[in-house]
Length: 92
Image 1 (cartoon, rainbow, N blue to C red):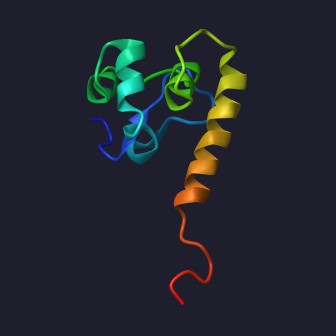
Image 2: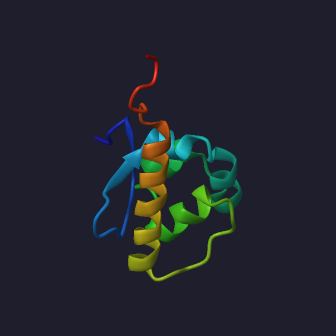
């Protein structure tokens, strides 16, 4: 059964899924690139790293070496996590 909190990845060496929050704001690009909703893509097993990277970077998908695409995807995910993380001293 798919994890409802995460979007799955295929053909990925290090990441098996990413948080839905990371992909949900890129819904329109996913539908442009794949003519399917994020939910449908997830039910079908998700995307490979290069396809998901194209979605989050807002460009058309093209086949890239998956190891390099996955490294770039990890960097983008890290930036997203840092951006959304509570900042030290915030709210004081």
